[in-house]
Image 1 (cartoon, rainbow, N blue to C red):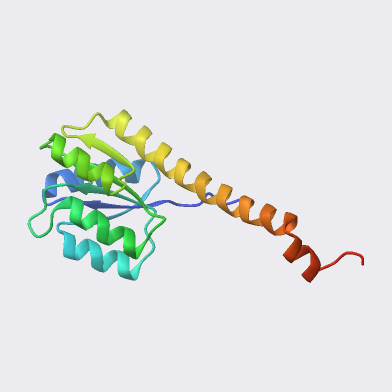
Image 2 (image 1 turned 90 degrees about the vertical axis):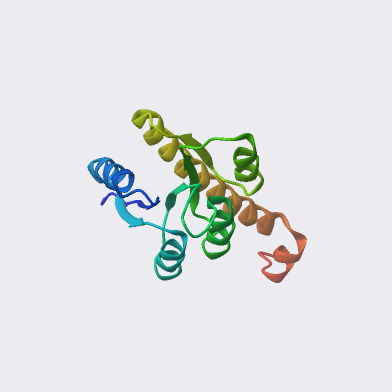
Length: 153
């Protein structure tokens, strides 16, 4: 069975950060795309499915928290992890309120970043699989569905 590749979009205005993260994630087996601003990130997400983003909170064109909301409208199942070198209570609260899946500080602790990314992707995948299981169980146990497809009268 072929291993499914996971795509990650790195959104950061600093080329050095994007390049470093891209090398690390590629070495870990991820498919990586890069965007230097929010508009480019939105265009990529409108054209291609992305499993996860590493999203800088300080971008030249959009606040990362605003971009987070817009990305979730385009791809609701995508994992979004905020990365920032300017941590603040206000940014952390906005990230949580906008349902960011993680929050990582620069300079990066690379093992922590990789662990967080892997865990967030796994948690999101498990949540969706659980949702489908619950829907299937509800259909099986609902009188409406049973009577539409009776096994006996």
